[in-house]
Length: 235
Image (cartoon, rainbow, N blue to C red):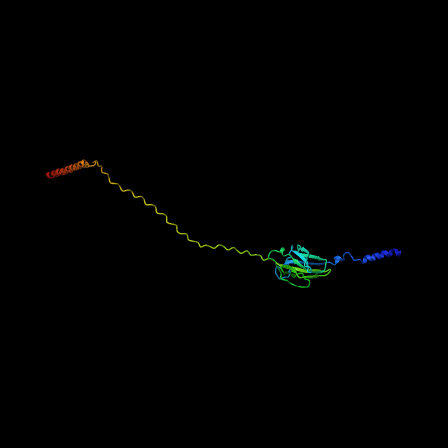
């Protein structure tokens, strides 16, 4: 009976001493962090400042300067990398994902593994962290980056057009004087009927007759007055 059980006991002991299939998984390391808007521009994340989603973050090997992995910050502005090989690494953010005019917060080192200080610098036009070392089964949670929002351009008021001085309108010209009434034509002198032909004197018989009649009437009046005077003297 013992001879039958002995091989099984040896086999079980051998299996128990073999490496577990989860050893590789247990040897992996992790690094995580967040990006935020540094509204007071002090390089330290405050409770009232918001994280930045949708920014591409890349993990580089410091030994080869090659990209190892990349992620996009989630809706909470966080990122997470799993590293299988221990070593020296650094993290780069894609500047093109930020609005134009975004700036880096001042670099800060609070120490103590606090993920509230800004770890990114502008190194040759690349926004990256300093190199850090990951050991086996290490979980680095202290990577963070603060960024300053672009300044809002204030719309300058458009200059108002210059106010022109009110020009006095010239006085209206006086109304034209009414035209003078037309001057009536002077009466023409009466025409004297001339019956004489060329070379003949005008006929004066009518004038002579008129003169004779007047003389007769004058003498008649004188005679009547003389007779009346005599009668008065007789009486």
